[in-house]
Length: 633
View (cartoon, rainbow, N blue to C red):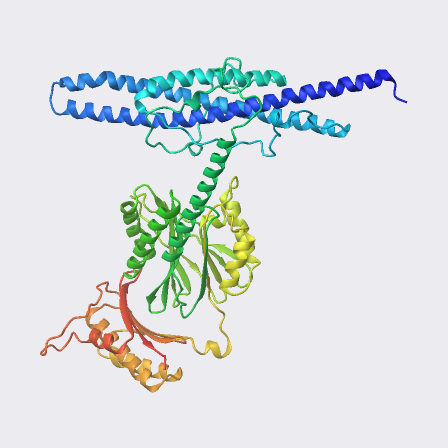
């Protein structure tokens, strides 16, 4: 049995809760609108500050130009000095007011969050005791939104000529907003963190729109006083109500911004994919696959790329790179230029470090404000290894058949575009059955984590992964948690050297002969080539052409090269490769021999019978001259 006294006390408690709820709602509305007002003022000040800074720069250039044409500064320069001093003063005052507006926005946000939590607590109590959260007109007390972190509206423009007036009016408006937010804090019984504080805050550049042309008159809405502020202008108080038209405008602007961002991302991704290889040519001795995964936003399209380039004589170049310092369409465009340059330099068949040296100078010309990381590797089936060089890129990983994962120890130089650095090459063995992975930092980098931890995770995933290159790509991307909403784009390339057995192994052979020099060099080369090619059971026509190619290349090395010399024969399932190396580094060139000339026709003969031919300098000095004969029926 409840006594009348207890009923009265319960009723008084309920009434007090309703009063507290009203005050908490009013505190929320006041602080929330104060936050929005401070953000609008900050946005407008940011625009005006940009104009003021531009004016200072313009006046400084004009004065410098006038004082530089004569020993005695002209009268025009003296006349501009007061304007320059005034503009600089305005710039300083605008910066201070901008910092103040951001501090007030943060304080208002804090009070609004506290008020929202107070409202939720009181409403929960009323519901628990069987009372409605609010009695009376619901329109006068709007419900607290579930997401109390509001989004600021667009900044307003104003004329640069009225900067002084804007400074005075914004100062007054900020004073009134500060008082209103302080009143809200007092209603909640919490102290104001920024009261009397002169702390300078770092203002995030992403929260303001870019400077643009200003209107002739400032928008008077910027200087309205927050509701419930007793010091505000008359006629501006609308207790407990929000401007629905403003909400509609903000919602429409957000929708347009989302669509614009989606369009920009779609354009960037389309350009990026169009500049990547549409299909990778499979080398004879390797199986390769690559994948590109764009980030979830336009900022996640960062110019990652990959490529595979056939160099001839069974050698293939692989490249993976990442444009840094830019995003979106511009990064994709820079990537396209770098990829084209890599392919052009690769045709010179230079060592990897020399290719990066050329790219370094070109990258600075393409985009002086951007740099790029890149790893360039060349696989030579005769050596069974990757020779590679790195420009600020992550190490190549190689998984052996026993599951052991090794990191390439190639020397790493700075990113492309920095200039003034000499790159160098290293090598890592790629044995039969091994798998190599080249990748960009988007695969392993995570915010707040050391990138070495991400590489270690990738090593573990690679150690546990078996299958074709395509399967390996997919599993590595999945194991590292890369999805459609990933914050950065990712490029991955997987190289796999198959372990050949049985009939498949019979299609891959190699043989070599040291050529000692002398008149017997060409006959020995012909005899060796005929016997080896016959043992490989090649067609008679291919055998004859192979013997002729070996004879001509050996004779060319004997006449124009220097010992030691070596003849290499190599067959795959698609071609026969004949190569002769010597110690002289002068590369041969095809020329037209005269009717009376007894020499000069060897390279022309090679170019006629071969599907392709070429030459390159070897790392230890000297050169290699090669040709390929197609085995296709």
